[in-house]
Length: 155
Image 1 (tube, rainbow, N blue to C red):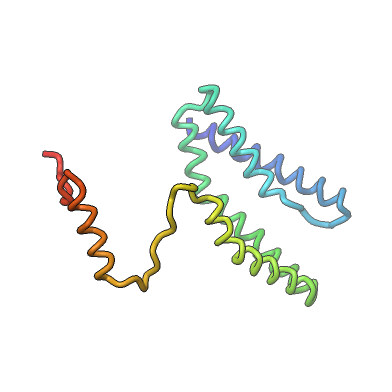
Image 2: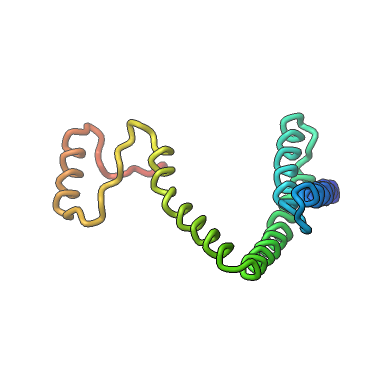
């Protein structure tokens, strides 16, 4: 039933918020530290576990999917806006640290792209490659291939 998916989500949210509060107290911070993230991870792991054990019907999964599309992004946006407000109140060091984290994240995207690419896969050609060269390459491929270069559709 859909209500079981909502109940699983609510349980994960409550446990995650409690764990975030406990983590905040242990770190000496007067706020919730990662409660929403802990709740999301719990939901992912519990949902995966229940699916593997065949204990989650499709209707329960649809309850989780509904709230994933509605509620979780709203909670994450609210938490992010609180983090930005706290960073502005924290002063220049907090702002510089956040900007450095964003710049480092953008700089790591090409590195992660290279790591994710298969070794036999060649990099894509640049956009400024001449069109005549592209057409010549296509003609050579179609001439050497016994199969017609034109796609055939099933009838």
